[in-house]
Length: 249
Image (cartoon, rainbow, N blue to C red):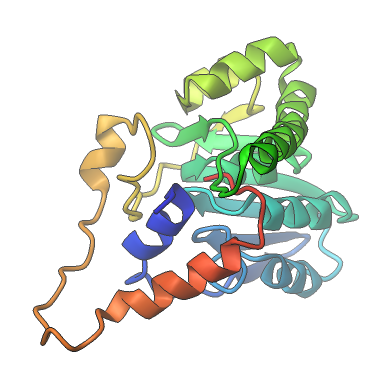
């Protein structure tokens, strides 16, 4: 089970939350919370609907709380944000990891609460086949990763080698560190919010976030002939993702 699927299963008890839009004068707030995945958390269709609800707001603040998800769904969301006429601001109040970081950087400005975390790492995926198919998949993975590296170099001014080195190490950054490295523009005065995702499947999770993680829902004893409750969900996700070359989480 690779990491995106593990995130989905570990957080299945979290009901899909609608993207909430609030408006105060010329400023609209869009609250995006969940795993980045079509139909399961933060998805492009919901983000587009939220932007439309924001109407003629001059500034849209995207409040992002996510452990990551699908790189392809994430890039579709980035495209939506980049085409917004209003000024766009990403606000990170707790956790912005993996594919979520590129979404944040698609905004004109990025701010982050002290105590929140920002994580970048390499693109990841699963593939099966012979040596030719595996080499082709690796080549495709590198192309996907180059796009992500480009997101980061454009924002930070770092070289691609510097960014790649940070991604290789799976780098978790505090607000101060993200600011020092150029990934965000400022540290927000708003207090951090609590992380409620189970992110045990991610690498090098800071102890502070690890302590906040919720335990996976307990597995109830069932008769041997009854299929586990999560099995159908797991298989549907597995079948769908065989059509995708790579995911980042």
